[in-house]
Image 1 (cartoon, one colour):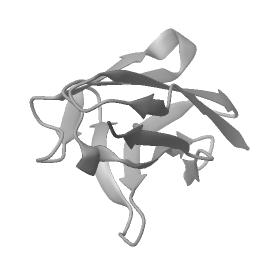
Image 2 (cartoon, rainbow, N blue to C red):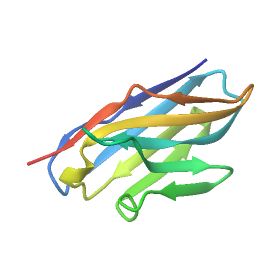
Image 3 (cartoon, rainbow, N blue to C red):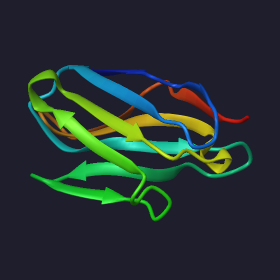
Length: 118
């Protein structure tokens, strides 16, 4: 099994910054993808930013230019630096990991709340 632990959410004013962290533990030999999704009230879960393959990074249009995804492979940890936050960024942010081996699987964190409000 794989366990994802998220941290870093909270309340921030518009224009502010937050850094989310997600650390994976458990049976992980190789990873196909790891990153972040979010879900605002009444909306579907959507991609924010994710690493795929060896070094490819995909950002949503809303994240481009404001959010930066980084990782520490030795710690199985990804970070999402979020700058210039807007009220529409308010959502529950979920860490996602797609495992290749020891056998394929997709895993989600419990979610961390981000609220952007004055």
